[in-house]
Image (cartoon, rainbow, N blue to C red; front, side, top):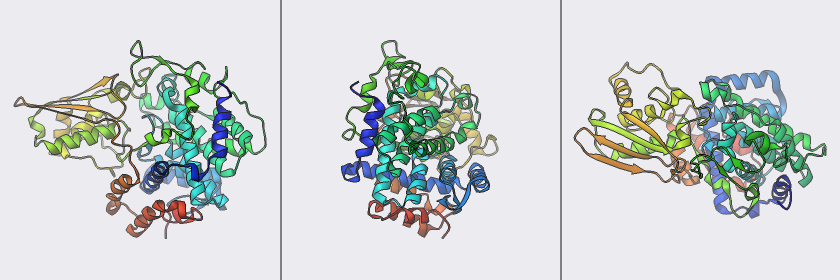
Length: 472
């Protein structure tokens, strides 16, 4: 590589201007903003959301600080970002990149707090988001499955870097300072997969803490501390720590390698085409409160159910083929056995529930374990036993294929390509607005939020955006 990866990223970020952003990138970021802001309103009604707000108000209150969404209280930059990250993550309806990282709840809260305190314009806010989303997605890229296989949860690990870059851009850090911000973020990154492996819930605070750590990295970089330029690819750097080597040798890959499992990638490709090829365009929002890979499964099941009038009792079997990593969450190295068999919260459950009911409710905040009380519950329990979920190494992420066989001998097939959930602003607006009548928030403010996001690049600050998500 001609120069250190951190230097390439720092140069890209420091020189990035709103005018350099393609229209489709701006549109995509607006979709992510709208999704995160609406989800924060939903998240504020949850136990975790209420707890995060209470903790922040107790430990980080600051009258002239940044705004905690929905509550409206002011707190320190890090405190407000921590609470807002939790609101955006509480219902598991964040956005995703390649299934296992969730840039939004790390990057957007960091940007909100810093843009509010610095008086940044809407264009500056969007530009900083573009920097954070793009750098995080590129650094993560092909390395995501291998990082998970080492026992690290990718979302907070890579999210710390995204939050640092976004904050650094809004702080006006120069190229050298951005290198340091990345170096510090590399040392602050953390989060294990033991929780997802055994259904522990500590991961509920992974993204909020990663957001705070990323912000701290950027703030400390203003001291002109010299960070290691080889923080990513160095012999003892980020990639060695979180993937096991600095040579691009992958333990697991999204698609099959020579041995059907491992592979090799070139670290230099992570910075190729910066500013011309945009990885952030592959981010997908989650409309349902479940793991990202279940969202396309729900949509595909609902489509087949709507197109074929087959009662649950007439279904002989349903087979769902998915990317193999989606069936061994959080990693083939540390799979959660409860997710690979019929049971509440498994992919089998979401398929059965959707077939019985025709859809899955996006605003259902929790999954009740006590199936069996109603006829529909019993139908879901019964149908789960006739669902088979198989992992395929030649299927893309979020591209399931379904086969439904009826007791009368008919067979139906359908599949997704993996592109369906990569929504633009128009699609996001349509999907999220359909929920407005059920949200505990004034409809007029929700409609104003949509309009504000659409015209955010014309706003002199983000004050109007924040105002739509605090009590009037």
